[in-house]
Length: 303
Image 1 (cartoon, rainbow, N blue to C red):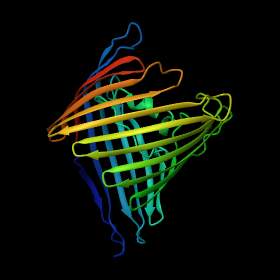
Image 2 (cartoon, rainbow, N blue to C red):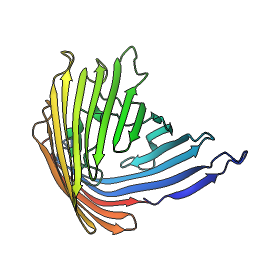
Image 3 (tube, rainbow, N blue to C red):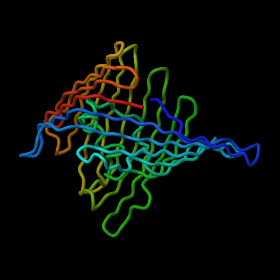
Image 4 (tube, one colour):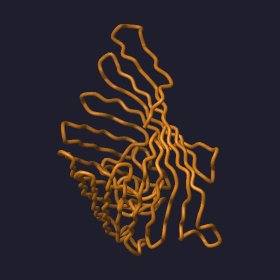
C-alpha cells in the first residue's frame, strides 16, 4: 500500500531525541452485493461502497522505547458521507515486548482465515465464530505480545466491562511458531458472559496451521468451545481456505462449518481477483453461507 507522509516532526531539544512522524493511507471498494437471504420486501442486490482512511504515528524515546498510534476512519453505503471510528489503538514497545491499548486483537486468534468476495461474504466468520473477536461478543481492549525468532506469544483481556446489567470477564492467550513458509498455532480464550449480549460462559481452544508451496497457499483452523454453565452449550467450528496465484490472477476457495443451532449447513465459496496495477484490483466471489447464497463483485483500491 502506498503511504503519503503528511507530517514529520524532529524533536531537537537535545541531540539524543529521535524523530516522530505521522502517515496517512487509504483504501476503498465499489461494486455490487447479492444476498438471497435479504428481508422480505428488500432488494437482494445492493450497491457496495466502503472507504477507509488510516492514520499511523510512531516515535522513539531517548531510552530507545518505541511508541505509536493507529486509527482508521471508515464510511459504508448506504450511509456514505458519515465517517466512524473503525479501530483505534496506541502502543509502547521495547525489549520487554509490546503493550497495546484500544481496539486490539484477541490473543487466541493467532491466525485468521481468508474470506471470499470484495468485502467478504462471511465464509470465514462461520469458522471463527468461537474464537477471536466473536468470542463472547465483546472485543478485548488490552494486548501484550512478545516475539523471539520464529516463536511469538500474546495475552489479551477485556478490562472494565462489568456493569449492573452485564457481567463480562474475558481473557485469552496464544502462541504461534513459524518455520520457512509454514506456521502452527494454539489459542485459548476464557469468557464469562451471563446476561446482556447472549450467554457465553466457557472456554474456547483453537488450533491453527497454514503454509505456502509455490503459487499455492492454505490456511486452516479448528475450535472447541467447552461450556461452564447451563446457559451455554458445547460447540465446534472449523474452516479451510486456499489460494492459487498465477501472475496477476489469484483464485480463492473456502469451506467452513460449525455445529451451533443457527447453522444449518456447511458454508463454502469461490472467488477471484485480478491485479490491475497501481493499487487497483477487480474482485468477485460467490458462495453459500449458512444456506444463504451470497455474491459480490467490484473494484478494490488502495492508496
